[in-house]
Amino acid sequence: MIKKALLYSLSFLLCTVVFMSNKPGSATSGNGNKTGGPGSNGENCAKPGCHSSGAGATTGGFEVRKKFQPDSNAVVNSYLPDSLYLVRLSGTHTTLSKFGFQLQAVKISDSSDVGVYSALGSKVQVVTVGGRKLLEHTDTITKSGANVNITFTWKAPAKNSGQVRFYGILNAVNGDGLPANDQPSNTIVFALAESLNIPYNTHAGSIKVYPNPATDVFTIENKYTANGAYEIMVLNSTGQLIAQNKLTVQNNLLKYQMATTNWQSGLYFIRLSHNGREEITTIVKQ
Image 1 (spheres, rainbow, N blue to C red):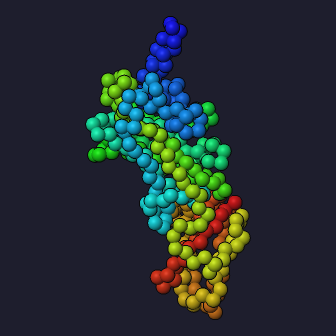
Image 2 (cartoon, rainbow, N blue to C red; image 1 turned 45 degrees about the horizontal axis):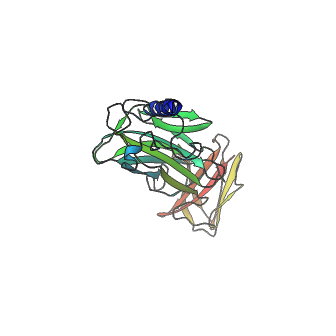
């Protein structure tokens, strides 16, 4: 009986440092992964004996937006490999205004962590636990308006990584330093499918780009195209302009070579414009 009481007391003591007001997150405090996803043993901060008194009282969700052109800032449910996205975990509670959180992104095929985090907020950090990279708070985050919003940039993984899933948890805290009256969410899950196609209007097949992937140089070719002035723009996965050239098409054949020697490896968008009409395709630099 004494042993059980001691074990319960120890469990309670450990939980008091998880997601509490003015305390760092669970992983920083030595309590590990509490996202409810892979590597957490199915646990989150709403488990019995921790913050379970108000489990589910805090609600939230993920939103993912593009950070590259065209259609920058568009909400998506799939990702292009090696591209940048703005991810937001947001949530609310009816009365409490300060929150802690923890989240991770994993590859469904093998449950490994995936992607690269950057542009973190002042109270957000990356912590490695058991070989997994987690995001969590360094101090409580106050909601702005109706919601608390945790935003960061996430670079999608390489081609053929497959579906990615975000796992996260929010905990609304009352600031008394004890877990009993805190109000955690249940595990929040959001899935992103891998897309190998451009998720906006293109004219597939009209532009040929070869070799693709390219090493040092590639050729853009478009047969049976209208004569006249054309502009070629190359953008990287963040929407940054890498190269731009103007040319004149004669005899209804566009054929143009571009060097890639100084380009970094990754995915690039090729935009071909003529008389207000635009066609887009992609190339990968090895």
